[in-house]
Image 1 (cartoon, one colour):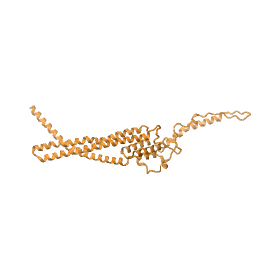
Image 2: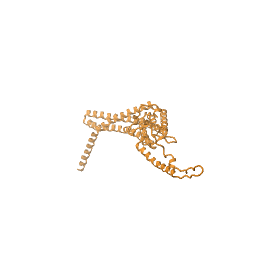
Image 3: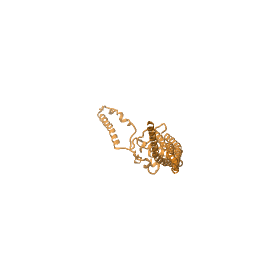
Image 4: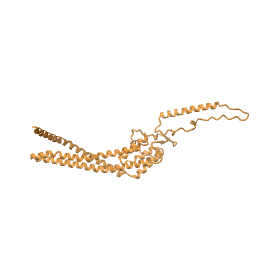
Length: 326
């Protein structure tokens, strides 16, 4: 009795497994078709990236543009520097990196942010490579599943003498095998080529940052000079800044008035000779010393920066004369 129960349970388990495998056949076929479309899309993107690099990549031009951008930053002309940086567009990775770098110069201007952006884009390239690296494994796996699942009905058809069922299942099995191997092969080739391309892009970004940010003196990126050649701390003057300047000047004005009153009250001694000079009044050091920090000054409208949520690549108009835009 127990053997009968065990045999019945074993047959039921085998039937459940067989039914589950048959149910998985169509999801596997759909997944294989999706992966095939996916790998061809990635292959098209790879061809486009290769075209951009062959057509526009020039290391000497990258050096010249970056050095000119650094010189423009040092002269207090950030908009001119942004135009030089935006001319480097031979890679999607570098273009996105420069967009974030310029946005940092316009808004936060953190000294350590460029290095962090470099690390972020290293992770971004790894993420891009994961797309095809997954297909390298998943493609052959789906092909193997699509091969083994139809073999069970094919063997059943062979046992029953149904050659048509046998032929149909074998054709499906071998077709999915070829499809899976094709997906894995294309994905492997795309991953290998992209790995080299993105490694070179990261190397170019490191070189660009070394040219732009390197040197003994810190780069005043994002800051500009006014018409008198003085550095402007703020990107845009506001009413709050003007009010702060008035508040800061009020104590000094009061101090000057008090000193003038004290000087008027100092007595003078009249003698037979020339009138004695009034006693010298020592002025406070705060009136003689220059204000701490860099002076604030207004600047031209043509040096206004873009907003943080605005695309700097789209906001610039056609290139104008460098001297007139400076």
